[in-house]
Length: 262
Image (cartoon, rainbow, N blue to C red; front, side, top):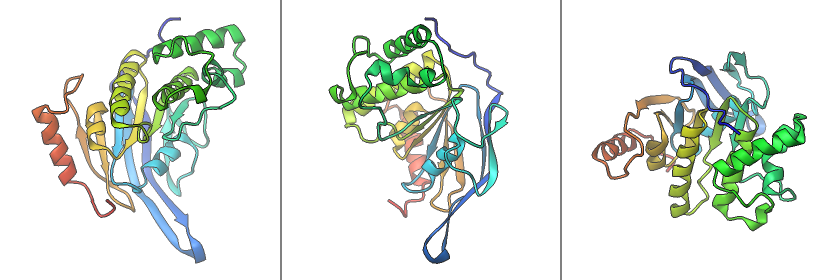
């Protein structure tokens, strides 16, 4: 199967967040404002990282883009359509690996196309392409319990890609992995993204991970979260954690963060 890589169109805004705010009602009528008037856009095939302190609303914002939550005010547009619900055009990869334990690797990866009614031969050919792409050739008949944490996350990435989403949304997908596996998966995700171009929004609170992966970083404040600053990361790939400019950016962004929730 040939790559379904999309051509880069740098000025095409694939995701647009317009004045997005989110408020949750607490006990006894109390109100918790999590997001406050957030606006930004994401270009075709851009790797955007949402970065900020823990519990600052990054996941809530990602869920709104995915259509899993509704904004209290404002709106999100993906591929020229306002987001009102989840859909196959938005692939989601979570920190908690949400594979079906009763399905094999093949069964998990082909699940989305199967639900959509794609014929068996076509969907399994497509699933095999993405299983190979994430480096799991030969593991098609294995179950999640037979795989390591990093391998299970590869299955999650392959499953999201196999559904042919227009955008990929990743919520701290490597946060639970050990340091060595995390570095390996960062390299793997970058390789897959360069091969199978998609617009990516990636949530993390790890500064090194953000700098290693991002074309652009949006730095968020503590709740109620707003955009504090945007950083264009024009470092060449593959990146070096001890490169002088990498370390300068790490220091600058770290010093500019709100740290009250750390």
